[in-house]
Image 1: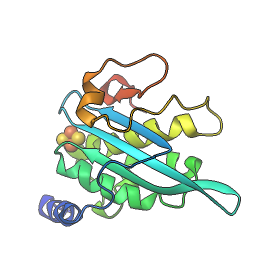
Image 2: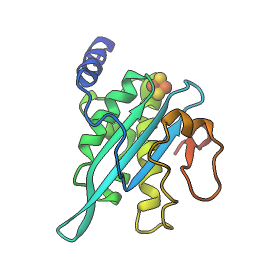
Image 3: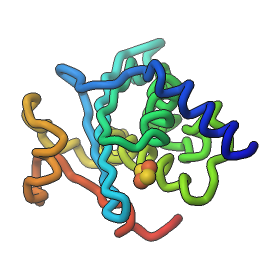
Image 4: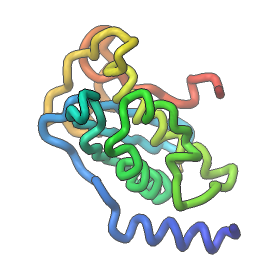
Length: 167
Ligand code: FES
């Protein structure tokens, strides 16, 4: 796929982005930032019971600016509907990019940002981990989350992706 094809797919995905915006009464929320490009992304998730399993009912996101991250988040929030937490956590940034196809090296971190936000939201809710920290106030904005100090217990934990070792 050449750059024009990719840009066209990204443009199509963001023309009518799915699941964009804050979610009221979400069961889980996560956020990540990338200090290199300044992009930030927050994701909300709502669960439901289906056939005796806890699955993702829906997910929404909020992002500043980056078209690729918005396109991936739009596709990813559709893709994870109906999946268990474990199934969603097993998806890589590349898989979450879905129909966009393989991203060029300089755009891979955009899909990793979406993967990171999803992990930030879902890992505390995963059955094998400790209980999730208290939910953040529903009226706090994404910018406020990123300008407030990270709290060691409770509140929203923001993960700066470039501080993590590449897996
Ligand atoms: Fe950094 Fe897209 S340019 S997330």
